[in-house]
Amino acid sequence: MPAAQRILGEHELASVVDCLREGIQILDREFRYVYLNQAALAHARKEPQELLGRTMHECYPGIEATDLFTLLSGCMDHQNEGAMRNEFVYPDGSKRTFELRIRPCDVGVVVMSVDVTDEQKLEAQLRHAQKMEAVSRLAGSVAHDFNNVLSVILSLTSLILGDLKPVDPLRVDLESIKKAGERGADLTRQLLAFSRQQVTSPRSVDINQIVLESERMLRRLLREDVELITQCQRGVSKVRVDPGQIDQVILNLAINARDAMPEGGKLTIETMDVDLEESYTTDHFGSTPGPHVMLAVSDTGIGMTRETQARIFEPFFTTKEPGKGTGLGLSTVFGIVQQCGGNIWVYSEPGGGTTFRVYFPVYEGPDTLAPDAPEPATLEGTETILLVEDQDDVRQVARQILRRYGYHVIESRNAGEAWLSSERHPRTIHLLLTDVVMPQMSGRELAERLTRARPELKVLYMSGYTENSVVEHGILDSGIAYLQKPILPESLARRVREVLDVPKLV
Image (cartoon, rainbow, N blue to C red):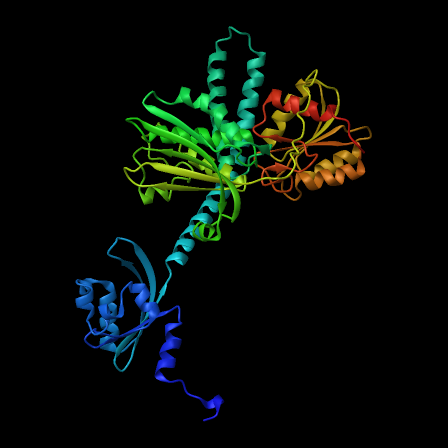
């Protein structure tokens, strides 16, 4: 017979079928195994003699009470096709998930199986990542609006307090309002951290040094029945992060660990160089292979269920009693780690303690940290400032602050008004103070147009959250001056003065 018309023999065909990733098993009408390829045997973790010639009832007692057997019976009786996902539990307690397709045949039924356990894990991780991204966007939007409200509350309170005499009876109430506003500002900062919209000052750092500096503070925060252990690998690689943010990560994880050990225990902080392999990143969605520095925080506390672990990074989710926590500690940690380009994973069992492992990419580049601006000799000035803010109450309070410090203020509600004001103003405008996110045209676009017409114009951006036209992943573009809302009288005046005092290279 010509080679082109050659027909495979039985043994050759069996060899081909054994090469398939898909498991194939054939059951007769008595649910007896009459054929299994190598993939099907591997899925079952059994030898051929353990299954072939035996019924499902003999091999798997109780199988008749399962959804799988119900589906098989229906396909057998009605000669139709079926499909399902089935979680198989092995004798050692481990589990794998299989995608099953069932088709009738002359003998009985053919069951085709594909192990989708790893894909299922990735799907779950992807869904969780998408949910966290959606919550992150919502949190950033809430923080933006709330920061505008807080700008008015805190600024007006501060201005009124500055006008009152020390013995004025209204001072006590205003101080309480101010403290409440400051607590609100703390919450918005945590929301911005979670949503990866905090403005940061990253630099090349040694995490060991941050851990050692945090150790002294942590020993004051921990109870006497909590033993603090640090295990830092000598000569650990450098990472590019904001040291203040890493302090937040360590502090929040340590406090969480302390609260998980109501009767005392051990809190261990560990650093180590690790090389994340492809196998790890395959199982951990969002992680990347390569050299990383691991920061691990472990406790011997009460541990967590899988249901709790699935939600711990969500903002405002907490297992603590009402009034004992905001539910923003771990969400803040999550956002900071993501913003640094790292990833965080939790390993916990009820009663078996908890370990958080944080992985930061190793950084080998130069440290390009900009020097701190010198302290202004005075916060007052006489320059002309073009103020652009679409929120009326925020614009009015900013105008009031600037005029109190001596500046001449031209105010506009949007980019169009600002452009007309600039054209109509015959003299020098020294500074553009603009909100970043505005309708029709962003603050960045407005600044680019105005500086082309007025090369001497300096620019200071302000916003309730970091918008990508000014900030990329929370890191300011080179030469960008930025003020994070909520605005306060002194902080606004200081930042304005700092920008005005720096010579502009035209």
